[in-house]
Structure formats: structure tokens, C-alpha cells
Amino acid sequence: MPRIQPIDPQNTEGKTRQLLDGMQNTLGMIPNIMRTLANAPAALDAYTGLIKALEGTRFDGRTREAIALLTSAENGCEYCAAAHTALGKMHGLTEEETRDNLQGRSSDPARASVLKFARAVIEKRGWVDDHDVDQARQAGLGDREITEIVATVAVTTFSTYFNHVAQTEVDFPPVKLDAREAA
Image (cartoon, rainbow, N blue to C red; front, side):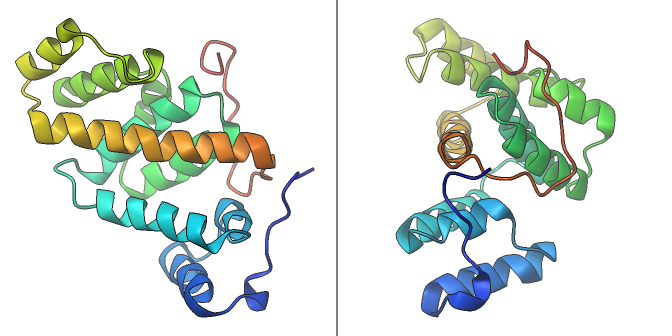
């Protein structure tokens, strides 16, 4: 049972209504996380704004979703894992890639390097060391890509923490995280 109740989109107005309507138009639904964030319009605006801004990264949708899947699993958020599985599918991730990404793996060498650095950021709570950054650079990641990885981890961490607090009801096909992924 949710701790924070989702808002009925019909009971919103202004920018909040515009953001929720945009989500409906984009996804064909308004996810419960968005309806719940609508309790604080500034939080909804910030979250959707950052997501939209990150569409302009050098990473394609598959790679952004791979980072989000890893972050969701590392933070033990089944809501986010379910949402990013669905979004990843929209961006062309296969079921096998999704399972691998949840565990921080990828058969694509470039994506594997991104996930390796993202895992270091998550596990070390941002306190990566020179070795982590050097490995990222040796894999071809520059300052822009490193910054974009941190931003993607941050927005996904925000959503995982919010879902933990709110106990958001999963409204995507469920994804069960195994004990290793939910640690």
C-alpha cells in the first residue's frame, strides 16, 4: 500500500497538468511515480526536466536505460526495474540485454565500460578513485560522458529513493530482483 498517495491527473492544473498530459501522450499512460510526484509539483517538474535533458546525452536510449537498470537493481527498486525494463524495451533492449544490464553486464564493449563506471559511482556513492576514472578514460569515456553517467545515476537514484519512501505501486509488468541485485 502506498505511503504517499498518487494524485488523480484530472485534479491537477497548470504546469503539473501539462507534465502529466505530456507523459500520457508519450507513454500512453501516466506512471504511478509521476502521479505520486505530482504531490509536489516542483519535484515532478525537476524530475521530468532532468529526464528530458538527459535525452541530449551522447548515449543512446539503450545505454541510458542500461545505466538506469543497473542503478535500479543496485538500489533494490523493483518499481524502477519494472519501469526501466519497459522503457528499455521501447528503446530496443532485448530480454537478455535487460537481464545482463540489471547485473551490470553488457555484451557491447562500450556499454560494458559505461556500466562498469556507473557501478563504481553507485557502490562508492560518488567517491570513485583515480583508478576508476583512468579505466573509464582508457575505455574512451571523456569528461562529458563521465558527467552524463553521473547525472543518469543521480536521477535514477532519486526515483529509487522516492519509490522506497512512497512505496509506489508498480504499474508496469513486474520485475523481480534476485537477492544479489536487490542488495
